[in-house]
Amino acid sequence: MDIQRENAIHNSINYFNEAKQVIPGGVNSPVRAFKSVGGTPPFIKRGEGCMIIDADENAYIDFVQSWGPLIFGHCDSDIESHVLESIKNGLSFGAPTELETILAKEIISVYDNVQKIRLVSSGTEATMSAIRLARAYSGRDDIIKFDGCYHGHSDSLLVSAGSGCATFGAPSSPGVPVDLSKHTFVARYNDIDSVRSCFEESKLKGSGVGCVIIEPIAGNMGLVPADREFLRSLRALCDSYGAVLIFDEVMSGFRASLRGALEYCDVLPDMATFGKVIGGGMPLAAFGGREEIMNLLSPLGSVYQAGTLSGNPIAVSAGLAALKKLKKNNGIYTYLERLARRFTDGLQTHAKQYKIPLQTAVRGSMFGFFFCEKEVKNFDDAKCADTALFAHFHQEMLARGVYLACSQFESGFICTAMNEQIIDSALEAAQESFAVIAKRI
Ligand SMILES: *Cc1c(COP(=O)(O)O)cnc(C)c1O
Image (cartoon, rainbow, N blue to C red; front, side):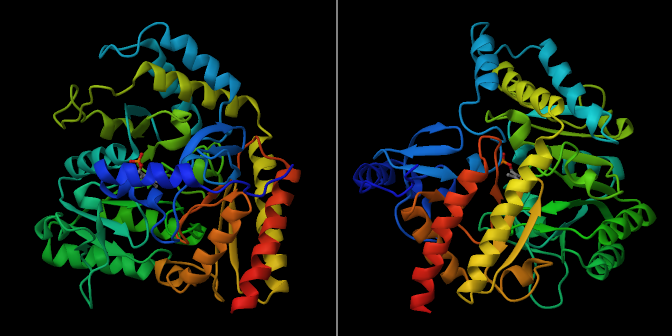
């Protein structure tokens, strides 16, 4: 297979210019604009297994997979046929359907401590609603999140580490009220002392911490798994301060393993959020947890949360097809992880050959790599990575038909439509790219 980008991207350039007239930055989610790597983002016409084809008929090996959802790649025939079948019965009812219960049971049956679940349409909604519920359950307003973790774009969670000695955060976007960000304390990933300080400071000055939200396998600062011991200590701290522990598994759920992060640690959260893979490529997400907490949700309890398209039958059909397929094939994650390691090991070998420092990580079908000398344990470490070098690498790979996430601080994804041959062609492109880069540094 020839993976070299063959055609100039005239159509993409035209489409991008047109889009910029009517859509801010030409995109409906900022990372798609390729701002941190430069160049014009290819406009995608169609997908095919592990490949995407752009508006100028260039084919790329797709390591983005719609940012995680497509664990079976594009146009999976099982998911497709479930969706087509479902579409014939109507697109939306705003009334309960049996499929929603079946999907809820699929998740509950594999994920410990999730006894009840509610479906929503995006990961942002899932985490926002989980936080509201956790605050209501604990009766406290303060929350703790971790620097470098992403939980969607709701106000309470668009907060990053404050300056100097302040442990509570600062808005990471204009428009987020400072008063609200004061309720969000920001701790350092894999650093239990920093979490303890947040708990103490909130107890002294605030309402006390109602909940802690964490990506137990962080995938939004590049791939940075949490240490098992750190998660154990985090659980113990939450217990001693009476805070709800929320695992945000929107990315890692059904991606790192069938049980998300639970496969890698012996710690159970009180609540968990899901998205991406559980929708099979359609807009679907969920939050769930211990029954005692979930029963506070309206209409049973008084915590309000709702959605016109929540549990949409088409989205649920796609998600259900994906989850059933994952459950049926228990070798899937071993297969995907083997391919992920083949890729990161290969990157290591080639990088070493050209004396380019590289750190890599793998969790199931998720992989990550950083251009830096030191192992990455938290966001400060991640920020040491050479983003200019990454941008160059990204451009070289794209020109050779390999579509990587367009930022140093994102994870990559393997899908079942990939095989060793595909990985090896991507590695060949990587070796050529490193050769070009090495000449310039
Ligand atoms: C993608 C993601 C979200 C947000 O999900 P959206 O569907 O984009 O709103 C939240 N948390 C994590 C860990 C994610 O990776």
